[in-house]
Amino acid sequence: MEDTQVSERQFKKMQEDLKDMQARYTDLAQDVKTLKNGQTGIQENMNALNGQFEKINSNMESIMFKLDVISEDRDKNLIGKMMKEKESFLSKIKNPLRKLAVCTVGAIMSMTDYTVEKASGAREGLEDIVAEASYNNKKKRDRMTEETDTSEA
Image (cartoon, rainbow, N blue to C red; front, side, top):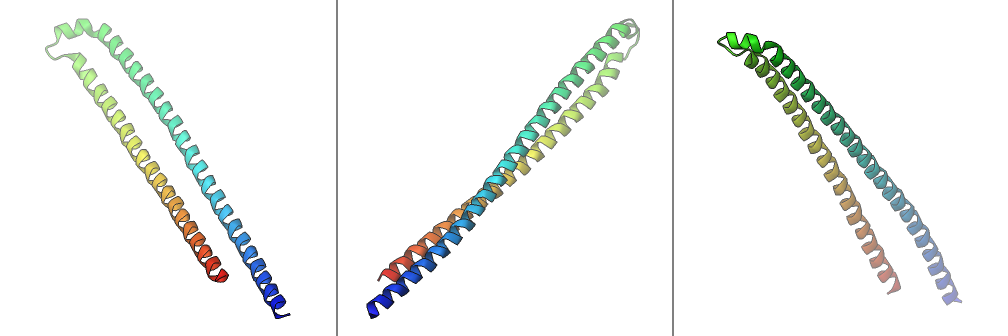
């Protein structure tokens, strides 16, 4: 009769352990879902940034083309005047436009570097979270294995 009571206790303990494991599994599944949603958000942000960079590149090409057209038009109109003047009028026009173009491209490159740096930092942070979650999960499994081994003994 006492063996039956011990078996019932063990059975109840096993049921409690099973409920606890189910709750842990549910929590873990929720954590994994949250991490996946975070990865999706980061990927969407990276895709959006890529689209913005493509627009910036297209705009820069358009600006450079327009600057070339302006420069060519002014060159054609001012050739006669430049021949008469000692100082090149073309250099007066080209130098400021070139400086403007260089500054604009430099600013875009700085912004690109900054964005890439921030995106890399976010990615590293996400990788750290995934590694920590993996480590915690392994610790939980090890503890559960030890508890199982102890209760069987």
